[in-house]
Length: 399
Image (cartoon, rainbow, N blue to C red; front, side, top):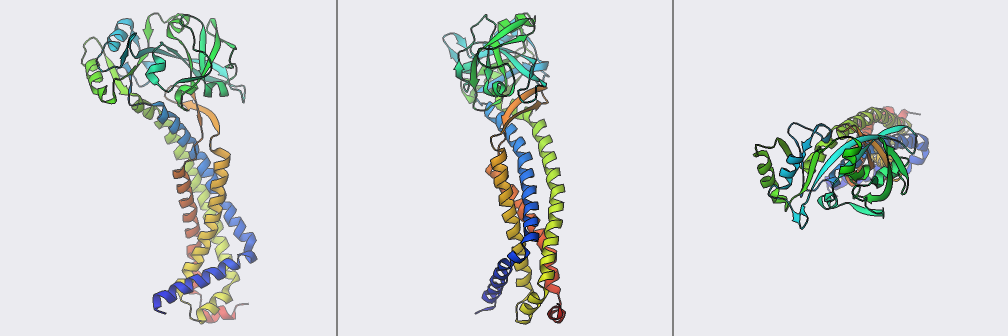
């Protein structure tokens, strides 16, 4: 047996010996594993909020859809167009067209207050006035109950997320908006995207209800192809009669998601770091206790010819095993508890609620397991070094 083979054999022997004696230290070992499981569960739970919000924004965008806003506007709330401007936008080259005209929807975006089903507290809910091409412009909107609103009538359709989160949006119910009552005649899905957080109505009726006259805030347009974007944008931005900003829908929603995802991710990482410090100390305590309890056994192994390196590595593998066990339990618990859980949060760009589902992704789980492994390795390193430096004679005399 060569030196390298003998070295690995020693590592395997000491590691198996350590793992077999875990039952004698099950209290300390369980405490360490549970601490790491808690870190992983909280880390995954918090970051699944950011992943879910990012996913809702991502699936909302299509490279074949462009959004036109007034130049300088970052959101629809600060934009505005008149009748002549929306007509010029709809006539621009690069748009998909059908017999009835260009696939462009001039839209209004207003905020209304509705109580949340869970708490009864009022929340800002987006109410969007759209034109008939809006369904074809977006392409992912599908009715799941009821029918579309009829033009010219006080009727609304609501997204699945809005219907789930806010009271009064059940099919057939009526809600008071401004001076009018609006009947819910349909419920629609949008592949889990941001549109599911909205209520849709006929833009002409909404203009009248809010005394907006012939004005809109944005134009959503379906491109003839993704490659038509630049021609469409150039035609609008070079037109002296217009003062507009043209962005792809994907870029617009990616920008809107930045504030929330950055905030949640920062908070999640900060919490994870603070909890990880506690878990590291727990792992250190567990492994120091393990070394102290087995001082004579370790010294005996050294006296029998086991090197310091195999002892160090074996103890770190023991710590890593405990960490992986705890991390796996925490990851599974977080997946069961959080994945698919639906809620609503504030979109700081529009100050309205966005409904979305928590998303525990494979990447997030992998990062969580790496975090658990790091805690285990750091927690096992110093006790392992202490065990390797333990004088053999002193260790054999230990009681």
